[in-house]
Image (cartoon, rainbow, N blue to C red; front, side, top):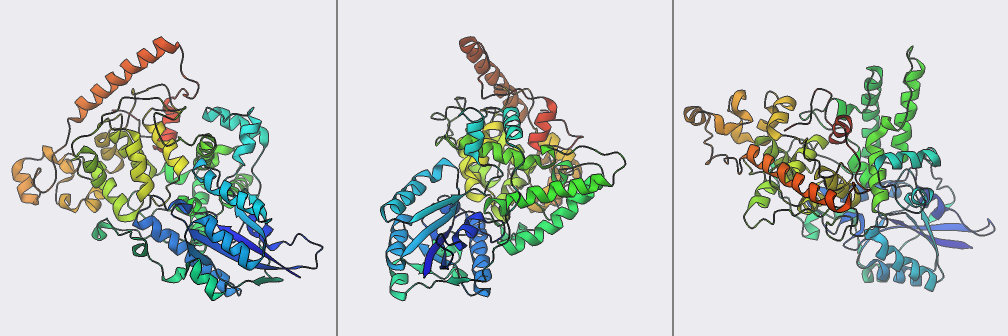
Length: 545
């Protein structure tokens, strides 16, 4: 007898460390049954973040699916890709293929709850076993919440304490064996009915999504898929080892480089092309190996992979909060009276036309490549919110969710709330913020980054490249860049706006403190070290205005 099982890919677009795949390969009978496997992905307008998605991220997703399909074809199967409502597609598959079990990886964020509840109800109604496995996060967020007394840890320090009680995250599961597995085929009539797609032939344009950046300034082409992710992991681990041998960790944070190809694994982690548990344990095991040969042994800990822990924290904070990416309905977000733009100020920020070169270069890189270093993300986010334009972080979240390759709903919203002083940080603390001019001079002293993404400034002397409006008119003419014609003049008086915003924040804070008498529990004190850590600032950069 053969049992028919479906493996439903959503995130987790990989074969390694995939507990839901191992479950789908397992029969639940006496052992005499063989398994017929149907690996599927459904474009339902939501899964894998396709509700709000730009060209680069959709391209990355399609490459990831094509890589899965290629790997499965090498062992006699294929990835079946459908377009339509997930419940409708799944119902027809259950009916026509006599499915016994549906397996998938947990999507813990509340934006997926309605979809998953509907699928689980369908499984109960049609007597199909439904199995959900945790592997997109290091720990099960529900376990963290239970361990913390039934509520999410409201501060990062509480989160660290809670996961310390739980213990280290699980190691990756064993590689799958397909030796006794048969891959199922979809009958042609059913394939037509449920809109079966050939993923190898799909492009973003097939979904009405078109490139919006400038291809002439695009310097890094990201490629999706498990195969590429594992290849990049090898290069990243060499970088980590060099850092450990040099006496430091978090190399992309400690020594940020904007001009060399980025080695971040976050896009691969976001789509699950790389297992977060594999990445975590590879880095920690490597650290222990290096320290074992070190005369002056330094203790390990969660700080070795701090970026991954922040990711877990934001995931956990969002689990029971469907309004996590909003302000007014969000119970952990302070309601700040942001400016409602009636002019083109928001569009100028999105398109890189603010007149501040570091901001504009970053925003144009985002459109061109789908990527920004975290320091640049935080600089541009601060500029939009409390640092300059005083526009709500909600607008920034929507823009980043659409264009960033690694945009996670919970992580993206969590970062924006932190940067805008709306949550996770000292109550309305505007005493320290990142100046795009001061940081540009420190992080891009020769103006190479700015010139790469703002070619209209390429001939300006280094003295003026970060403040082109200060260049004498004869210098501007000689360089072929007249401020106000070839490159925009600054859209605001930055120093005046920063002072005004700080005063407004302090005034709001005073009123809140007078009413409540204490800092809300979801806000945590921030010192210089924590600000530097969160903003990914190197040691020699002080967060100041």
